[in-house]
Amino acid sequence: MKIERAVKSDINGIRELWKEGFGESTAFLDFYFPRYFDWESALISRQDYGEISASAITAPFEMKLLENFIPATYILGVVTHPSHRKKGLSSALMKESLLRQKEEGILVSTLIPAEPYLFDIYSKYGFGEVFTIKEAIESYKDMKEDLGKAKIFTKENEIPEALFESLYDFYTDAYKGLDITLLKSQKDFELCINEFLVFEGSIMILSKEGLISAMGFIRDKLSPVYIKELLSIDAKSKQALINSVLELNKMEEILVKSPSEGASSETRLGMARIIDAVKILELSFLDKDIPLKISISDSLISDNNITFSIENKKLHLWENEKADFYFTINEFSSLALRYGLNVESFLSGKDGLRAYINLLLNE
Image 1 (tube, rainbow, N blue to C red):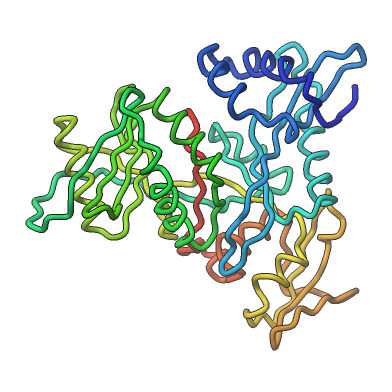
Image 2: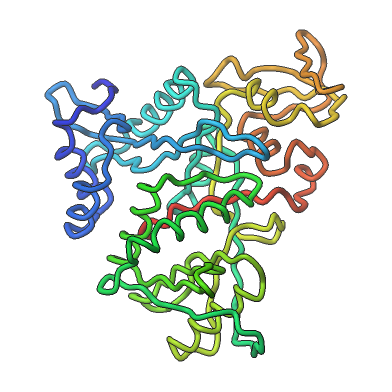
């Protein structure tokens, strides 16, 4: 068995692996693989006789981290063929992927666990809980102000090309308003839109005089109906879109999911792993005053085994010095990316940064 980058001729083998390992439908595979599958981002485990027994995709993204934009990845499609499970293949793939990301200059790796138990599994590879999502049951509220018209788009009534670019700009601006997130390219956004319309539901856009003020991904092809993601410029626009969804579906209330506001009560969503601790500290945290020494331990990436402090906008690395705090790399990833290096907030579980990602792919 060997781990290697996929080549173009491996596409059908990986497709079959997704079918057997994930149980993906033929309809989804026919939609996704010809249009969006990037074989160059795939890492595979190949048996000596050529069969692909496991794979993982490390999709490149630009991450907004406070005021900086850095190279990051999103890991998806981690799957092992049923006949090769319990052999450590996924574990070997994860470790190799992270080491290669370090060599390629990636600073942070992210993922969204598909099941709750996977949070504990991925923590073993250095991933800490970082991203959250706000969930609330919302009801109809009377509004006197005219905030524009809500228009619904479906698989049959697709978003016009002329509107698509404005919608992408609105979506990107909303994400740039967060503290920590992954920014989608136009191709990524197109995938989100098209996959959602084909398999999950409809998209509602609220606008007035050509200016978009809110958009919602309404998961209405299955029961119960809910809003999988709602973005808006303000609370009034958010409520106006909720009112329109409730009226359209003849509902009194609905579950609404929206980007994190940093509250400790929010639902955990995704994880992140710092690949290069020194560069992350130098790029985004030199404005912090941290006179206490913090020690990081990382069993996979040795360069992250450091003890540091930050004073007068300078990073100080200490050797053979006793630290005031000791954190594993998954704890440090949460400390830095969820709590902005605020040790007190991290230890007490207080509110953190507005950290949110959502690829909106089929659940």
